[in-house]
Length: 406
Image 1: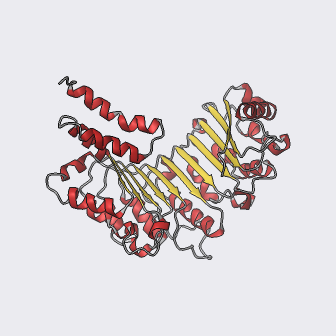
Image 2 (image 1 turned 180 degrees about the vertical axis):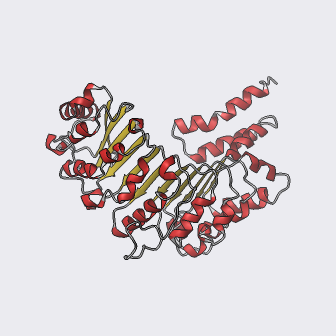
Image 3 (image 1 turned 135 degrees about the vertical axis):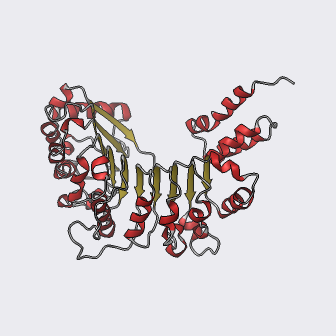
């Protein structure tokens, strides 16, 4: 039987997750392909098993229980947990409401603490059905999660915390955390009589010291208050001087008042000391927007110029990204009234290192709207007219994308 060198088959197997991701196969197909490779012969088993354990995707109680009984509690198999670099823990709320057997009841952080020493990324999704069973809500979770000492990247999506302090303890307990993504987290609404800092008495702490922050919040009043509270607290940590990339996505923008400072309050300005990338995503919801002028007025209210002028080295901002998503057509020139304010704000003497100012528009195509190619040309003509100075610097990038049908 013709055999290939072990190094060659190992390299081929290592490319399976990458290739599957590029051709948009789902995680299940990647998993099945690697399982098939592990059954080909004994020579293929080590490389296949290594790839299978690189990422633990836990999305059912059955998968979690098998992982505990056959791997964690097996002296022979436990060694393979040293291969794990990423953990994704998913609980679908619709699948867990009223259920007596839920992933929310599985104490992952407590059971696996100390057994995943090489994990660098953790993600927790949709853990909001019942906080009494949420392992992130347990009083000792913050202490135990510190044993995941190499975790640099953490994603928390639609998780419910029993208190704001529970979230703070979780973030400060991870010694290596430098990349945080928060997608609509929740906790009991802050009291109405909180101080303007909304920080619950938080003092300056050295953790987390984030390099990148990606946050998504809705604009309903409770969510806005939670967002203000979180950003104010984070501005009191080392992140205020360490942050390099800030990405903010605001949902249902039409409900935000200009004076609300884009949901996040005056503490937003505290994150400009070392900022290199500022990415603001405006989702105007199903109703669309009658015009974009309020958008640019609101952008001005963010005091980007004040933020940049206050930096120790104001020339270090390298990339400003503005993304607009709307169900209405954005191709009326009057919609862009106010865009010219950016030409006055992004002055060359302040932004010598600015390499890119990007405007991306995602729209729901109507009958008379142009296709993506012509739409991009229209937007390019708009920015050339509205932003002549920036256009002359050849740093503007424009794109238009049609949203898929709802």
